[in-house]
Length: 112
Image (tube, rainbow, N blue to C red; front, top):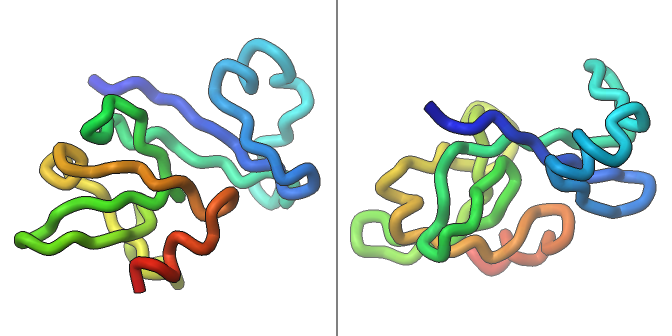
């Protein structure tokens, strides 16, 4: 069974908050209700990249698929309006997290 963890990108302050900060330091400050536009909540996929780093939604990873290096945005729902992919355990085995779409938006342009 995987850990259920989240992180949050605060749009107003352009800052990423990790799970420990959300839970221990300021959980009352986060309005996690639907329709809240201050934070973008991202869930941990339960997978680690080749360096042991946790892979979350909206991470940008580079991995090998069918012998080709590809760069893509991690998501749980591939029916969204962007070129996101569900990361698989096989993808994660070779994946390297390059950043995320909030702190490093230019990374997806490199993969296009």
